[in-house]
Image (tube, rainbow over all chains, first blue to last red; front, side, top):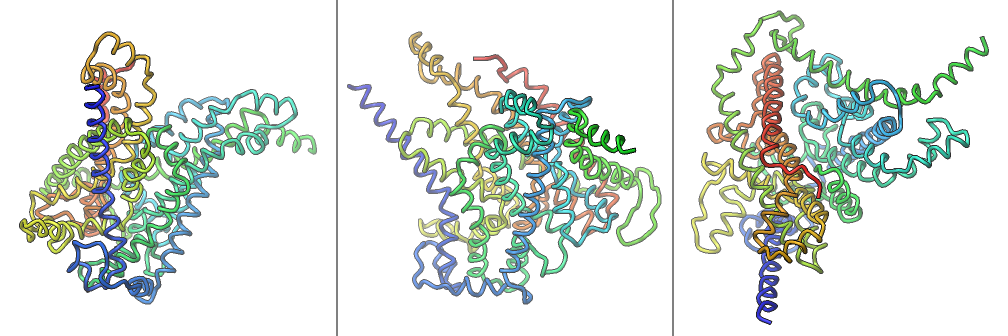
Length: 282
Length: 302
């Protein structure tokens, strides 16, 4: 009886701790969400209260008007173009390459696979200057090409690894049966392996989209001209401390810029969690 | 002639040829977007290459010499190491503690998991980075909350060289959710039979944790440690947007330093040299971490 009581108290305490930490963690996000509905002049005067004294949608209207005559609609469209094409590229190339790593038999496969794994540890920032100088030589700076073209060549090891891993789990008997029925290497991919790999493709697609959507450094390096800015770059320009800053509008547009990621999070959380737990990568 | 064309298709359909065809995007991409830029930048690091001037010449080790003679280079090394070696262990520790707490709590675990995980999904966005800057601004949220409980509400968190880097460390630790998920799934894989056997033997709970749970988690911890240490070295956006490297270069992270070398100081050659040195540093740290592996990482089965 005594033991039971003690463990119940312990359970209650750990529950309370978990809840309090959770609230503290979420608080900044809720604060920003609520502040976007306050009158912009009031935000930091009433920073301790979450509920706006007077609710307003003005910040959303002002923010949407954007900067230098370019609206946030355009910035979001740019973000969707970059993230969408980048994700298509990553999925097409990574699934083909992953299929070859999983089912292909050729000399040097192990070496190539090791090289692919090594790209997991060779992150974009190390390549920032080398790639910039190379794209500058190619004359690609100032366009979306450096942000999109490389994704079509499966150099993001994370996605290849994730997909290869998943395909390794698909029973080989399925390909063998298809082969007896006269399927070639390519049609086994298109008709059997690819349809069965949809869960891994969704996971890879989610991560690709979120990373591209959030990518700030890439946009900063390669995108020129306000009209071509993705949302991340526009937000940074918008919040530039050297200009008079409308925090209400910035928070409103910040909230909008989080909507795609939060939507993915809510609807596809299962795939996100699976991707993280199976690969052990963020 | 006709039969030759047929055999070409037949050739492409052979399994080993087809495998190579499928892996071709990676081979091309690896050469075109990794090997070529890296080698090109190695070459540029020995020249006074300039993006505007068309001509440039070989200047030997001058870029490397300039780089090591620049005190800001050493500030950036110090800031980056400080940031990485505080934020990564703290984040892993936090992730582990919360994962252990969550493992027990029953009904609401889905909601909690979402609450903890959301920051690490949104943390990479510029919106959150901007928000973080406002939290610690002198007229920001933290000071307003401190004022509410009667404390000093005018401290400049982002203006003091002791506290500024901690605001960025906090931003990194705040995003512990994905590590927590990894720990949760690793914890669930530990078979119950081990705990049952040890409790029959009369092992206490702390003892069970240190003798069973922790050793079996070490491979997961190790893997996370390596990956997060690498990404810690690459911190850029938060420093670029929130602190611009200040105050007194305490948050001048390596990547920020590299960025300014090439874009503000217009010295791409030196920037290329910095990129190579960074690659060597990351390689060395990874190698050292792998060397320590056998002292503390459990690599047996269950």
